[in-house]
Image (tube, rainbow, N blue to C red; front, top):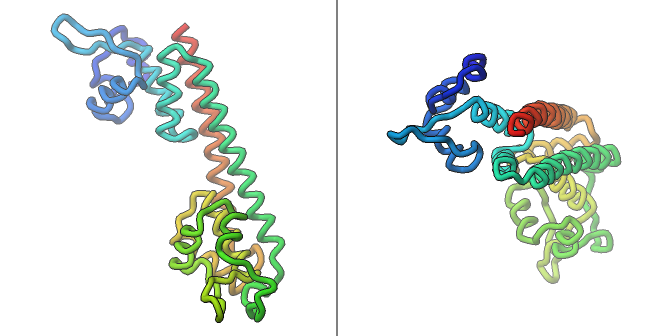
Length: 243
Protein backbone atom coordinates (compact mmCIF):
# COMPACT_ATOMS: atom_id res chain seq x y z
CA UNK A 1 0.00 0.00 0.00
CA UNK A 2 2.88 2.36 0.82
CA UNK A 3 4.12 2.04 -2.77
CA UNK A 4 0.71 2.99 -4.13
CA UNK A 5 0.59 6.02 -1.86
CA UNK A 6 3.97 7.23 -3.03
CA UNK A 7 3.17 6.83 -6.72
CA UNK A 8 -0.39 8.13 -6.77
CA UNK A 9 -0.98 11.75 -7.75
CA UNK A 10 -4.34 12.11 -6.07
CA UNK A 11 -5.26 10.42 -2.82
CA UNK A 12 -8.55 10.23 -0.99
CA UNK A 13 -8.84 10.34 2.82
CA UNK A 14 -9.57 6.61 2.74
CA UNK A 15 -6.30 5.98 0.89
CA UNK A 16 -4.25 7.59 3.65
CA UNK A 17 -6.38 5.98 6.35
CA UNK A 18 -6.10 2.42 5.05
CA UNK A 19 -2.39 2.76 4.41
CA UNK A 20 -1.74 3.56 8.08
CA UNK A 21 -4.47 1.66 9.94
CA UNK A 22 -6.44 4.81 10.72
CA UNK A 23 -9.99 5.95 10.26
CA UNK A 24 -10.82 8.55 7.66
CA UNK A 25 -12.05 10.78 10.47
CA UNK A 26 -8.61 10.59 12.10
CA UNK A 27 -7.01 11.75 8.85
CA UNK A 28 -9.43 14.66 8.64
CA UNK A 29 -8.75 15.52 12.29
CA UNK A 30 -5.01 15.55 11.66
CA UNK A 31 -5.52 17.99 8.80
CA UNK A 32 -7.76 20.15 10.96
CA UNK A 33 -5.14 20.16 13.73
CA UNK A 34 -2.41 21.27 11.34
CA UNK A 35 -0.53 17.98 11.50
CA UNK A 36 -1.16 17.55 7.77
CA UNK A 37 -1.00 20.49 5.38
CA UNK A 38 -4.36 21.75 4.12
CA UNK A 39 -5.80 19.60 1.36
CA UNK A 40 -7.13 20.87 -1.95
CA UNK A 41 -10.83 20.42 -2.62
CA UNK A 42 -12.70 19.17 -5.66
CA UNK A 43 -15.50 21.35 -7.09
CA UNK A 44 -17.91 19.20 -5.09
CA UNK A 45 -15.98 19.79 -1.88
CA UNK A 46 -14.14 16.49 -1.46
CA UNK A 47 -10.63 16.56 -0.06
CA UNK A 48 -7.77 15.65 -2.38
CA UNK A 49 -4.51 14.55 -0.79
CA UNK A 50 -1.12 14.07 -2.43
CA UNK A 51 2.04 12.05 -1.77
CA UNK A 52 3.22 15.01 0.34
CA UNK A 53 0.27 14.47 2.68
CA UNK A 54 1.11 10.77 2.86
CA UNK A 55 4.69 11.67 3.83
CA UNK A 56 3.40 14.14 6.44
CA UNK A 57 1.28 11.40 7.98
CA UNK A 58 4.17 8.94 7.99
CA UNK A 59 6.35 11.57 9.60
CA UNK A 60 3.87 12.34 12.36
CA UNK A 61 3.29 8.67 13.16
CA UNK A 62 7.07 8.11 13.24
CA UNK A 63 7.60 11.05 15.59
CA UNK A 64 4.98 10.00 18.14
CA UNK A 65 6.85 7.02 19.71
CA UNK A 66 9.92 9.10 20.47
CA UNK A 67 8.43 12.49 21.25
CA UNK A 68 4.86 11.81 22.32
CA UNK A 69 1.63 12.83 20.60
CA UNK A 70 1.56 16.44 21.77
CA UNK A 71 5.18 17.23 20.90
CA UNK A 72 4.92 15.42 17.55
CA UNK A 73 1.82 17.42 16.66
CA UNK A 74 3.54 20.68 17.59
CA UNK A 75 6.56 19.78 15.47
CA UNK A 76 4.39 19.03 12.45
CA UNK A 77 2.36 22.21 12.87
CA UNK A 78 5.55 24.26 12.99
CA UNK A 79 6.88 22.63 9.81
CA UNK A 80 3.59 23.08 7.97
CA UNK A 81 3.51 26.75 8.97
CA UNK A 82 6.99 27.24 7.56
CA UNK A 83 8.55 27.68 11.01
CA UNK A 84 11.35 25.13 10.69
CA UNK A 85 13.43 26.75 13.45
CA UNK A 86 10.54 26.30 15.89
CA UNK A 87 10.27 22.65 14.88
CA UNK A 88 13.99 22.18 15.52
CA UNK A 89 13.64 23.85 18.92
CA UNK A 90 10.85 21.43 19.85
CA UNK A 91 13.04 18.53 18.74
CA UNK A 92 15.86 19.85 20.90
CA UNK A 93 13.52 20.03 23.89
CA UNK A 94 12.54 16.39 23.46
CA UNK A 95 16.17 15.31 23.23
CA UNK A 96 16.94 17.39 26.33
CA UNK A 97 14.13 15.61 28.21
CA UNK A 98 15.52 12.25 27.16
CA UNK A 99 18.97 13.27 28.38
CA UNK A 100 17.47 14.43 31.69
CA UNK A 101 15.65 11.11 32.04
CA UNK A 102 18.93 9.29 31.48
CA UNK A 103 20.54 11.41 34.18
CA UNK A 104 17.61 10.68 36.47
CA UNK A 105 18.10 6.96 35.94
CA UNK A 106 21.78 7.34 36.72
CA UNK A 107 20.86 9.23 39.90
CA UNK A 108 18.46 6.45 40.96
CA UNK A 109 21.13 3.82 40.41
CA UNK A 110 23.66 5.90 42.30
CA UNK A 111 21.25 6.45 45.19
CA UNK A 112 20.52 2.74 45.44
CA UNK A 113 24.18 1.80 45.34
CA UNK A 114 24.78 4.19 48.22
CA UNK A 115 22.24 2.40 50.43
CA UNK A 116 23.86 0.65 53.35
CA UNK A 117 23.00 -3.07 53.47
CA UNK A 118 20.29 -3.71 56.02
CA UNK A 119 19.62 -0.03 56.66
CA UNK A 120 16.12 -0.21 55.20
CA UNK A 121 14.90 -2.58 57.90
CA UNK A 122 16.81 -1.03 60.80
CA UNK A 123 15.25 0.79 63.75
CA UNK A 124 14.22 4.41 63.46
CA UNK A 125 16.19 7.11 65.22
CA UNK A 126 14.84 7.66 68.71
CA UNK A 127 15.63 11.35 68.91
CA UNK A 128 14.76 14.10 66.45
CA UNK A 129 18.39 15.07 65.92
CA UNK A 130 18.61 13.07 62.71
CA UNK A 131 15.11 13.82 61.47
CA UNK A 132 13.53 16.54 59.36
CA UNK A 133 10.07 18.01 59.07
CA UNK A 134 7.78 17.92 56.06
CA UNK A 135 8.49 21.45 54.81
CA UNK A 136 12.28 21.19 54.57
CA UNK A 137 12.08 17.70 53.05
CA UNK A 138 9.53 18.78 50.45
CA UNK A 139 11.70 21.79 49.61
CA UNK A 140 14.81 19.67 49.14
CA UNK A 141 12.90 17.39 46.76
CA UNK A 142 11.30 20.23 44.82
CA UNK A 143 7.76 19.07 45.61
CA UNK A 144 4.84 20.30 47.71
CA UNK A 145 4.20 19.04 51.26
CA UNK A 146 0.85 17.76 49.96
CA UNK A 147 2.74 15.41 47.66
CA UNK A 148 4.60 13.91 50.61
CA UNK A 149 1.31 13.42 52.44
CA UNK A 150 -0.05 11.66 49.34
CA UNK A 151 2.99 9.39 49.31
CA UNK A 152 2.42 8.67 52.99
CA UNK A 153 -1.19 7.63 52.31
CA UNK A 154 0.14 5.30 49.61
CA UNK A 155 2.57 3.77 52.13
CA UNK A 156 5.65 5.02 50.32
CA UNK A 157 6.96 7.02 53.26
CA UNK A 158 6.23 6.35 56.94
CA UNK A 159 7.18 9.33 59.08
CA UNK A 160 6.76 9.16 62.83
CA UNK A 161 4.96 11.83 64.81
CA UNK A 162 6.70 14.09 67.28
CA UNK A 163 5.11 13.24 70.67
CA UNK A 164 4.96 16.88 71.74
CA UNK A 165 3.87 18.69 68.58
CA UNK A 166 2.32 15.91 66.53
CA UNK A 167 4.35 17.04 63.52
CA UNK A 168 5.63 14.49 61.04
CA UNK A 169 9.31 13.67 61.51
CA UNK A 170 11.19 12.04 58.64
CA UNK A 171 14.16 10.01 59.77
CA UNK A 172 17.06 8.89 57.60
CA UNK A 173 15.18 5.91 56.18
CA UNK A 174 12.16 8.07 55.36
CA UNK A 175 14.32 10.62 53.57
CA UNK A 176 15.92 7.84 51.53
CA UNK A 177 12.52 6.40 50.62
CA UNK A 178 11.20 9.84 49.67
CA UNK A 179 14.19 10.48 47.43
CA UNK A 180 13.76 7.13 45.72
CA UNK A 181 10.06 7.79 45.17
CA UNK A 182 10.87 11.18 43.70
CA UNK A 183 13.38 9.71 41.30
CA UNK A 184 11.08 6.88 40.23
CA UNK A 185 8.21 9.30 39.68
CA UNK A 186 10.48 11.27 37.35
CA UNK A 187 10.90 8.00 35.47
CA UNK A 188 7.11 7.95 34.89
CA UNK A 189 6.42 5.14 37.35
CA UNK A 190 3.00 5.19 39.04
CA UNK A 191 2.61 5.16 42.81
CA UNK A 192 1.14 1.67 42.74
CA UNK A 193 4.18 0.49 40.78
CA UNK A 194 6.60 2.15 43.19
CA UNK A 195 5.03 0.78 46.40
CA UNK A 196 6.28 -2.82 46.07
CA UNK A 197 9.71 -1.57 45.04
CA UNK A 198 10.00 0.56 48.17
CA UNK A 199 8.91 -2.42 50.27
CA UNK A 200 11.62 -4.53 48.68
CA UNK A 201 14.24 -1.90 49.37
CA UNK A 202 13.10 -1.60 52.99
CA UNK A 203 13.30 -5.31 53.58
CA UNK A 204 16.40 -6.14 51.55
CA UNK A 205 18.30 -2.92 50.95
CA UNK A 206 20.64 -2.29 48.04
CA UNK A 207 20.24 -2.35 44.28
CA UNK A 208 19.28 -5.97 43.64
CA UNK A 209 15.49 -5.66 44.31
CA UNK A 210 15.23 -2.96 41.64
CA UNK A 211 17.43 -4.53 38.97
CA UNK A 212 14.50 -5.69 36.83
CA UNK A 213 12.87 -2.25 37.02
CA UNK A 214 16.10 -0.46 36.22
CA UNK A 215 16.72 -2.80 33.27
CA UNK A 216 13.23 -2.01 31.95
CA UNK A 217 13.86 1.69 32.42
CA UNK A 218 17.09 1.44 30.43
CA UNK A 219 15.23 -0.40 27.68
CA UNK A 220 12.48 2.21 27.48
CA UNK A 221 15.00 5.04 27.23
CA UNK A 222 16.88 3.19 24.48
CA UNK A 223 13.60 2.59 22.64
CA UNK A 224 12.80 6.30 22.83
CA UNK A 225 16.22 7.22 21.51
CA UNK A 226 15.91 4.84 18.59
CA UNK A 227 12.36 6.04 17.87
CA UNK A 228 13.68 9.60 17.75
CA UNK A 229 16.17 8.52 15.09
CA UNK A 230 13.40 6.90 13.03
CA UNK A 231 11.26 10.00 13.39
CA UNK A 232 14.14 12.26 12.37
CA UNK A 233 14.67 10.26 9.17
CA UNK A 234 11.01 10.68 8.18
CA UNK A 235 11.05 14.36 9.11
CA UNK A 236 14.13 14.97 6.98
CA UNK A 237 12.37 13.33 4.04
CA UNK A 238 9.26 15.46 4.63
CA UNK A 239 11.31 18.66 4.78
CA UNK A 240 13.09 17.68 1.58
CA UNK A 241 9.80 17.06 -0.23
CA UNK A 242 8.37 20.36 0.98
CA UNK A 243 11.40 22.11 -0.49
